[in-house]
Length: 180
Image (cartoon, rainbow, N blue to C red; front, side, top):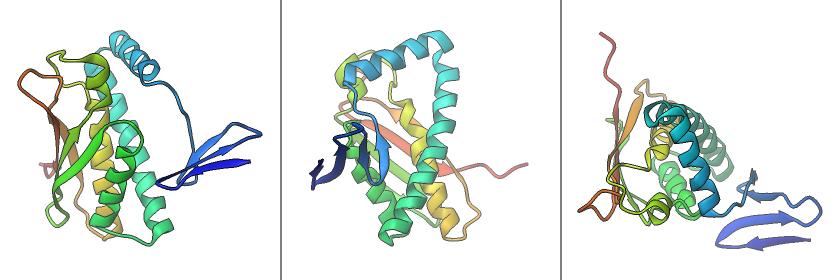
């Protein structure tokens, strides 16, 4: 027997216990479990090293996901980015809102509300959602490549709700600097 939630297509195979969403196998774990593991790796590697590893892995994963979803749903351009933000928002990471997107210039601004990291860690006076940065650049670059654009981007977190005086997080996607 397979159980499905229509607002987020989650299927659970009763024989194997495998969860799938958007035809991808998923893992379902408590938030504290994931965050505790994240913090342990961060402490072992250092934030800078861990952030780089996560950026590259997230970039690659977002590119792949956007490519497959665009094909599956027959969508392109901004619709792919919005679909990605919508799906991320349905998976417990937080609520991702695209405040600005300009494919011609490779620019996007994403607001993050209800961050799982902030809910778990609280006000720790630093940007704790760096895990997401590669996701936004990977999504943008896949969309740009599908349009035939040679433009490639980078992303960075510019604000976190984990910082005093901030209620939301922000991420900026911008074009990579041209090689000198």
